[in-house]
Length: 369
Image (tube, rainbow, N blue to C red):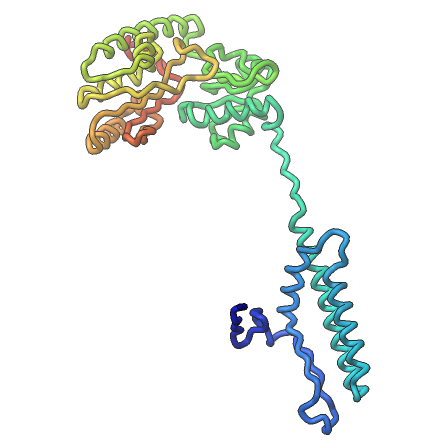
């Protein structure tokens, strides 16, 4: 048995009837017609909505809904006009039908056009000149590294395209000094660090990081005070001091290390500032070293060691107190970032990051930036 369907007041076949818009009526002028005169109401807004939704479902090759509706209305009017007894009433009715059909066709055409316009693909904006090709990818990597890893007080020398990339990654324009590719090192005078292609960093012998390869190579270099020979002697002395300090931490009962972390510590691959920070924290609480990270791309760890550590151990209150103590340190022991993080298992841990380049001589008394 087919269930009875109830239609609420103001509904026709379950569809709301909008009687406030698009009303066209024809009433007989003949008094004899009495209440038998003809009245038509066209719900303009409802008709447009119905036609607009139907227009999206039109099959390829089929006539448009506007044409179908206009033809249907025209045939309906043709059948009934001939039956009307009053010519004036027929004329008015015909005019209303024509107006309604024209409105339907217009709505369908406009709706179809806007639908096609909205669905048209938008062209992608071309990347800036500094970001194009393999060289652009290397510039992007270098700019990201400088913005997040380099000491924020350093003045940075750069070629025009590299300077544009650095500005786009948040490096202040006041920190940037232009250098000319192929010129001597004097072109970067005043810059603590130079970020450019190999041809523009001839006066900065110490490599801090590198990105890309071949013609797309971008290097981050610095010119140390005292010259290259003195710098190499300082690097060797600092490496020996890091190895000695790392071995001492390995024997501490308050620092627990995994196999890889212990090997890195013993090899002198951990930044001096991290070694001193771990010793200070271990004097307060026992810790477990989760791992070291933060190496400089393209540089051996013996020359640019790990500058990040993640450690865990104390409860939440002691962890927060340790974080406060770490953040209260002054240069050169003030970290670039110190935060509490969550390990994959949900355990809270303390992460400490130091900026590049690491100073030499902190353990030997001959500190240099």
